[in-house]
Image 1 (spheres, rainbow, N blue to C red):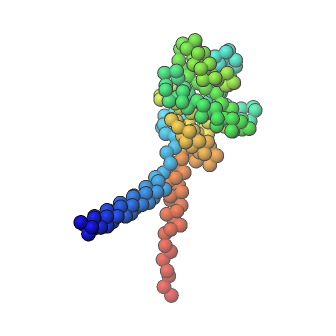
Image 2 (cartoon, rainbow, N blue to C red):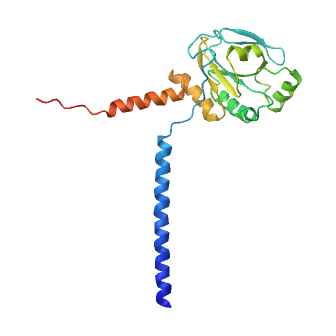
Image 3 (spheres, one colour):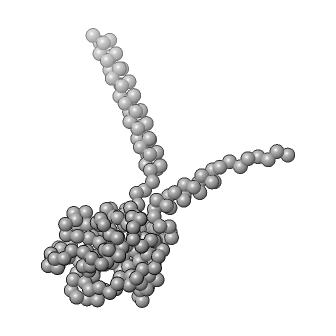
Length: 214
């Protein structure tokens, strides 16, 4: 009886050790995959103005009747960060605080405003109040959305002080918003392009140089 119990304990400990080794191996593979998987940047549509093109200034009014100009040369030297949202978009509501946080962080060089193409002014007033957007312009304009071919929300634009389109894309997370800022700072249209370029550079560096025979 004692020998049987001892053997069963030994078998049990062997199984525990084997399982622990399997878990460690799986954790290592997950870490490797995490390093290899490229970060997901904002999805950039092919329609509408291209990154790098000059934008046309559009004179609009926000919900409270204040004059707002989007596009063209910006006299105050700030980048214009436009986030397209809608009261019927649940993702938009969760992303607005993130956009406000990034705008505060980048306040020295960036101004944030919100845009939508809805036609119910009162609904958007209530929406803006609920999201505490009193400090940010909020414009309603179908023409603005059509000019930049905004077909899905949330959608963001970054327009430089010189009037050029710095970056744009469909955004669902903080990482997407940050990828647009990274694209603007790096001068590369999308994060995917940046990753592809980096991979090409690494590939070139790793290519062995053939030895020349004397």
